[in-house]
Image 1 (cartoon, rainbow, N blue to C red):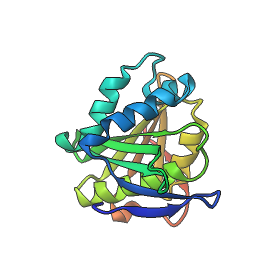
Image 2 (image 1 turned 90 degrees about the vertical axis):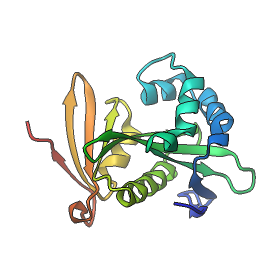
Image 3 (image 1 turned 120 degrees about the horizontal axis):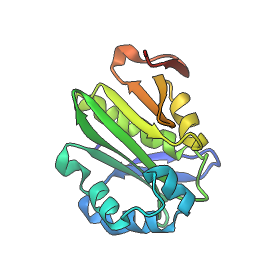
Image 4 (image 1 turned 180 degrees about the vertical axis):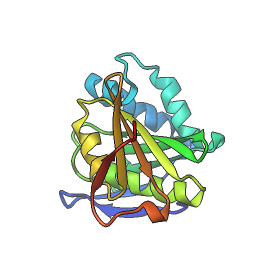
Amino acid sequence: MSVDAPIILRDGSRAVLRPVRPDDEPRLLELLRHVTGESRWLRFFTAGPNLTAAARNDAHAGDHGGFGVLALRPETEELIGHGTYVPLGAGAAEIAFEVADGHHRLGIGTALLRQLVDEARHRGIVRLVAEVQPSNRDMIDMLSTSGLLVQRSTVDGVAHFELPIDPNARVDGPASAPLPG
C-alpha cells in the first residue's frame, strides 16, 4: 500500500487509509491516550501499558519488517483507527488493532484488516495470528466474519486466532474452524 485508499464507513461517512510513517508517532500516542481503559486492556492485556513505547513501536513497525496502516478522517486528518502486523517468523505475523472510541462497528477494523492482509500477502506472509481477550466481541466478530478461514482455540483463557492468508485458503464467506489439538 503506497497510496491513500478512500473508504466509506457503515454510517456513510468517509475515511482514508494510508501506511503508517515514523512521523505518525505523536498521532498514534494521542489515539492511545484517548481510548478508554477498557479499550487499552483489550489491546494490550494490561491496565497500564507504556503508551509512549507502544506508539513508538507502531510508528516504526516497518523498521523491523512489520507494517501498519492508519484510518483518518479526510476533512480533519483525525486518526480514528490503526492496524499493524509484526513478523513472528516462519511466514507468520501477529496483528493488532485500535479503533477510536465512538468509532467502533463502522467497518474501520475490517478495512484495516483487509489492508494488512494485502500487504502481508505481498511480503510473503502466509498466516496472521491474533491473541484476543474473550470479552473483546468486536474483534472476535471482525475476525470471524473476515472472509478468511479462521482457526480458533483458547489457551489459558485467551482466544487464539490463526488466519491463513494464502490465496488458496480464502473462502467465499465467513467461515471458522477449530485449531487441531
